[in-house]
Image (cartoon, rainbow, N blue to C red; front, top):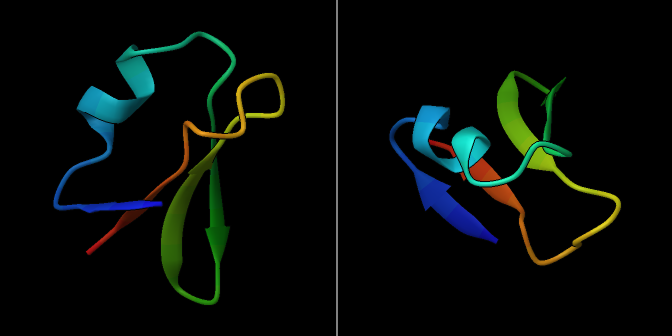
Length: 41
């Protein structure tokens, strides 16, 4: 999982990415390509 300042660029890489908020953090998850994970801040 990558930790990034901004998730906008991570979201543009794949159309199956979803932005999820958990415990005050913003995550990107992708069911089709599980390597596309990122967390903000």
